[in-house]
Amino acid sequence: MNIHPTAIVHKEARIDGTAHIGPYAIINANVEIGSQCVIGPHVWLDHARIGDGTKIGGHSLIGGDPQMLKWKDVPSLVRIGKDNDIRELATIHRSKDENAETVLGDGNLIMTNTHVGHDCRIGNNAIITTYAGLSGHVTVHDFAIIGGQAGIHQFVRIGEMAMVGGMARIVQDVAPFMLAEGSPADMRSTNAVGLKRKGYSEKARANIKEAFKILFKSGLNLENARLKLAEIPDDAGEMKKILDFVNSTKRGLTGV
Image (cartoon, rainbow, N blue to C red):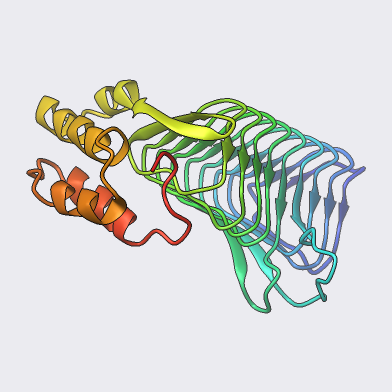
C-alpha cells in the first residue's frame, strides 16, 4: 500500500494494498477503496465505496453531506464502480435518505469542477464535462454526454447516448440518442456522430432520425407521438429504448 506520509487515514478505513493515496488526502472511517485506485492530493473521502481502478483527482470531495437546508444526518453512501476517472475539484454528495446511495457506475469520465448532487444515478461510460452541475436525484444513462456548464434540474433523466450541449439548461427529460442544447433547452437533432462512432447501423440511425421527427417536429401531442413511434421497426433495440423512456417520463420531454 502506497500512502503518502502527509495523508490522514482513519484506522477503520478499508484500503486495498495496491491503492495509492496522495499527499494531504483525508480518508475517513466509513470508506472502502478498491484495488489499483489512485487518490490524488488533498482529496477528501467519507461515506464512500470506491471501485477497483478508479482515479480521483486532487482537491475532489466524495461523500459529502447533501446540500439541503432541512437535511438530518442519516447513514448513507456514495457508491462508485470500477475504472472511473474523476478529475480535480469534483464533488459527489451522498444520499439524503437513510441507507440509500448516490451511485456512479463503471468507466465514467467526470471532469474538473463538476458537481453530482445527492441521490444521482449515473450509469456506465458517461461523460460529465467541466463545470456541469447535476441537482439531486438526476439519472444519467449509459454513454450520455453532458456538456460544460450545463445545469440539470432535480429528477431529470438523461437518456442513453443522449448529448446535452454546453451551457444548456435542462428541466425535462432528454430522450435517448438525441441532442439537446440552449437555455431553455430544445432538441436540435439526433446524436448522429455518437451513434455512428458507437457502430449503430444505417437502418438504426434512420429509425432514430424518424423518431426525432415524430417527437419533436411533427406537432403531435405525446400520446399520438407514442402511437407513431410504435410503428417504426426496431433494428437494434433502439426503438424499444426510446419508447420505454418516453412511456416512463414524469417530468415530460425536452422539446415536446
